[in-house]
Length: 303
Image 1 (tube, rainbow, N blue to C red):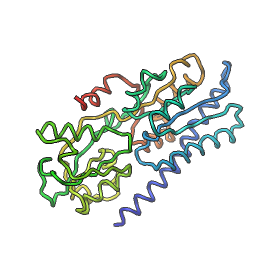
Image 2: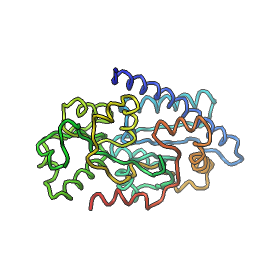
Image 3: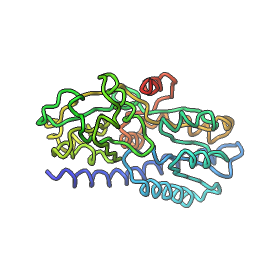
Image 4: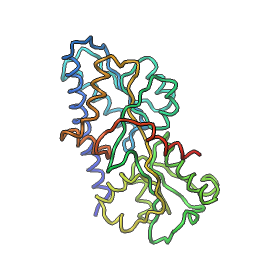
């Protein structure tokens, strides 16, 4: 079975679906806005942190954002200038948001850092298979007969993450602390990060590395494409469900049409087929209102 080819084909197909579905979603939102009796904004600004994209290249994320902005404006002949920005660092995010924004999508680390600096109102996060957030697994190859994390000393671990995603690293440090082991810098030989699940799991699958850390959602997708991954790999440890990202509105714009449209429509996406496909792309059954309690498991990682 050509796993790499199947995953590549699936990824390209999902990117096309992403552009089409999210375009429909935003077009519908903006059409509703233009029909309102309230005064419309001159610009509508959406900021998506590059680090919120779990499985997309930086240039692909930027390209998708630009396609969306151009498509929406041209196809609907909108007078509003629809602005989409995809910053990469905390400084870039802060700079993009400080003048004005309507909606911003951040990973959890970015939200914690920026919540007191920007006018952020956390309002939504994902709900998948009965749970909020994502679970990580520490995987090994069954043929290596590894039964405890202590056996990974001086080995290489692959981790599914982008540059500014800290959750899996914090969880690894927690696992090592609980076993009375040294921190990862002293304990393992090397840590290799990648935003593509295939590049993280397959080295362990093919006995090129001893262990990897990947989200349950990404692992399930790979198992669908190649069931032998499930039979050959073993879950050594599993995390609690962790909030990896959230959507925030600008709380200074509570009286605007854009604020109300964005807030209302997010929670009904799962009620139509287009919305379901969009949510599937993010491994979510639906979006739910954010609650502070959802953040607690993440905050406990650093303790």
